[in-house]
Length: 174
Length: 235
Image 1 (cartoon, rainbow over the protein chains, first blue to last red):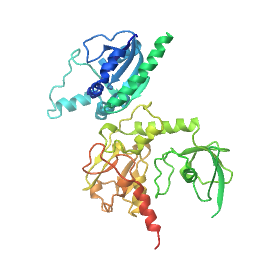
Image 2 (cartoon, helix red, strand yellow; image 1 turned 60 degrees about the horizontal axis):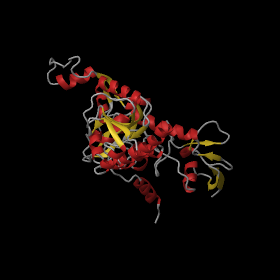
Image 3 (cartoon, each protein chain N blue to C red; image 1 turned 180 degrees about the vertical axis):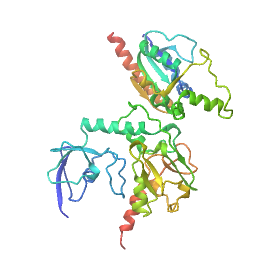
């Protein structure tokens, strides 16, 4: 049987959703028989590959790197699943929207106690922040939504099982 | 008691002449989603979740504020109504900062329950991310305007059941805010009796008991109805 190509993506989130993914415990062994993990923070692959069947997207869109990666992933993936509350709503990552522009935010974080203190602005070193933090579906179309902070392992398992069944049917049709 | 006969979703229903469409539907076991309605309080028709279609009228009518009539034909679950209700809940989520993961009412929230019941899995609109205050000047309770949906259940519980009217709403549109007394900190309110009825009435994590943390704010909002009915009993 041909294994489905699975990716997991870590954008503006705490990695808690990925922790919850690992909480599926022994079912991970069964999952490994049905999928090949082609991209993930858990494996050492630098470039998002072509022809991905299912991608779990953790985190909100908070900087230019996230924008670049999610657009690339959208082009190269059949089914995107917004994975956890940050991807679905912006959640805690989007709390920075309450502090105004990225510049206001950086000042608040780095220069609150020292009004003349330096604010780091090294182009090309850290990714440039987007004006506002948005959910994933505000940037690219998303097929499915898996809420929770983090979603519990049972919910992730149910979502992946469902997506794999649909994916198998779509692969046969091709 | 005079009786009216009407149909709801094709089902024949009888109800007292003074009943609302919402009451008639509930008696017949038909669920219409509500948010600003709370048993024991007057109805204001503010949240628009209980909108229904009535044959012969182009306008959608709030079931909580529409009296039954003889021969009335009511539809409560048309695709148009489902679409509007979902949109209403999305707009409520977009208007303030409802960050469920860090909310005291997470898992015990009427707004969350509504989203789930109406199949609202994500918000299609841009979040407004307004700046909202949290007032914890009161010794026992707090109010977090980030979570407020302006249902005014607290305002009505305080006015109609406690007879005080500490709460009211100031401002217009999205700038509206629930205020205590003359827009002063809750802890400085001279009218508040600290009875806690607003805490019982609030559907979200906006009004809470101090000391609760994420997911701990449970309440029994049916207590408002219990108080009102107990008062009307005569022994």
